[in-house]
Length: 303
Image 1 (tube, rainbow, N blue to C red):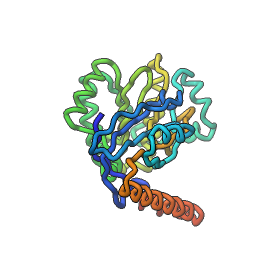
Image 2 (image 1 turned 180 degrees about the vertical axis):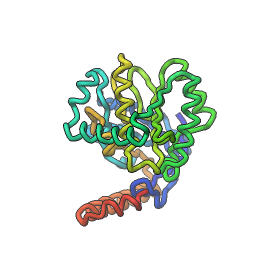
Image 3 (image 1 turned 120 degrees about the vertical axis):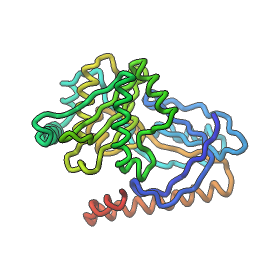
């Protein structure tokens, strides 16, 4: 496994203020590995690499991972709960895991979207190679308008490698795509590969013109209904990071960290000091914003 250039971002929400480039080997843990509390095996670093970026490491394995680094600088970049939904409990059982208020809110949002769309939800489902071609064409156009694409560079890919892999998954019945149309216009998409019974929340987005109708939540609920009807699936993995959307639809989670293990050089020590100072300042700013009731203004800045 070779190192690749990775920006260590000074970031507030989706907005990147600056970044420091480092050559890092990314070591991601799967949901299953996080649930089992495994320590990943660290590949050998080549001479040009600055270190490792380890993601979704169970928080209680931090010290063990730092020890395994053998004197490298261990720096925790972020903490979050890696969330998932249990797909073995049935759709009715899944609904019971939500509060009455959450269920009621989702029904109201779905009804509102249906009303705008002529009385019914317009959800379109895709899984075969030909269907995924049609899905990608529309979803990519939605992605171009999302903040994930514009600010994070994390929209739905359209390179040949991604498309080839998508078709391979579709041929093996190991991918699902969903589109939500509102009043005849494509409003939101969800793209999920499937591996070993785990459905992965890989790419998602909605047209900001429809934000007031909560298209992402409406589409997610219908996708969950479809997956329960599929049968034979184990979990829906909301992947790295956290947020209100993931908390609403998850049934469980693992406290995790993203950790950097960097070679013990002066430049890397200064990098972690700068990142740590920025992260602490951002956390204090967030707390002050919440205390003063300025969350809406802050949200606009972050995006």
